[in-house]
Amino acid sequence: MKSPLNPYLVLAVAIILPGMGQVLNRQPVRGLIFVCFAILLGAFTLKTAAPEVSFVGKIAGGLFVWAMAAFDAYKVARIRHAVWSHAKAPR
Image 1 (cartoon, helix red, strand yellow):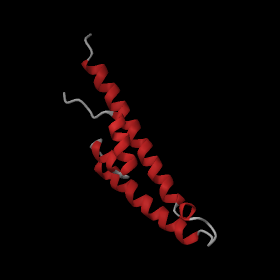
Image 2 (tube, rainbow, N blue to C red):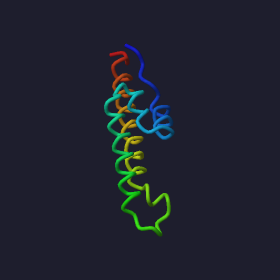
Image 3 (cartoon, rainbow, N blue to C red):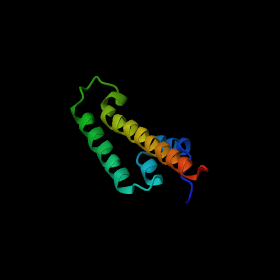
């Protein structure tokens, strides 16, 4: 059985590129869904935010989805690593 990637590596990649953590976890469709929702929600908040709101505030919806994608990728990688460690442990 092939060892899964280190959860911290998956987290680092997911923080840098949204959706790539899911791709590393062999969940490419889930990663694509996260990217699409980050773009959609970021565009929505960009268009609906008041003019005096900062740029970060205007894209806050997309940043929120990006953060949730990174957390999801880390959580799945951590669970896979724990299951793999338990399965390879001597009984």
